[in-house]
Each structure stands twice: as structure tokens, then as C-alpha cells.
Image (cartoon, rainbow, N blue to C red; front, side, top):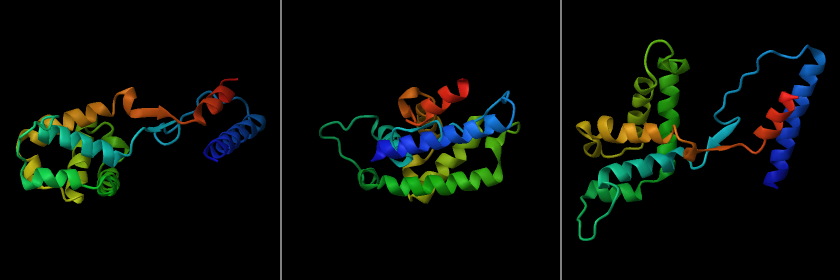
Length: 168
């Protein structure tokens, strides 16, 4: 069923491109919003944020016999859906404050840091876990870097047929 939906979506995109190319001369440039169109995350944002937070707070390992405080234990119970919701709210607020990822006014990292902070705040992660340099010097750089790797992303199944059609 999912592959049929993907095939229908790809066919619809190809038909739309065909109609455009028949009505006008061949475009010189076609742009796509890559995220959610050509590619998507392999795991939900909330899962990626939770994994990064756990790795930062626990040092990447849970050593045998190591006792954890109540805040650390609560992280294991943290529902990734709360982080998904927190991300959506923080991202929406940030795009209102600084549209186009702050283009020309700030670096990508400066744009994304408040989104990450807002995500954890909205999901009610214990602020004590993110005090001092932990968020800005440990968690944020690792999380930001994880989104820059191919391991985080996968090509949408409908993207390749559409790109191949456009290339003709």
C-alpha cells in the first residue's frame, strides 16, 4: 500500500512537471525544498534529540553500578513525541523571529541553537541537565553535526523518478 502511494505521488509529480514543460519552454532552474520533499529523516526528530541528550548526559554509556539521579532517570521515560512537539513549536517560533534560517544575519549554528534549547524547554526536560556548558559546548554541536551526515537522512522513494524525468 505504501509503495502504491509513493508511486502515485511520483506519477503526480511527473505529470505536473510534464504539463509545465509542455506549456512553456524548458526551465533553466528548478529548486526544491529538500527536507520533506526529496529526503526525510530516517528517525523522528524526537528520537534523535532524545538519543543525543542521553548520550551527552550519560557520557554515551551507562556504566554498571553507576547511580543516576532522578533527572537522568526521567530522561529514559521522556517520550520522543514530546520532543517532536517541542521541536515544532521552537522551529515555528524561530522562523517567525528570523525567517530563511537567519540568512545574512547569523550563522546556521546561531539560528539553530534557540530551536534546540526551545525543544528541550517545551518538552520540560530538567534544566539542570543542560546547565553550564553542557548544552552549548557538548549537546548542541553533537546534535547539529548529526544532522549534517548522510546517516540521518534517506532519499524519498518518489524523488529519484521525478529527478530523472526532469533531467530528460
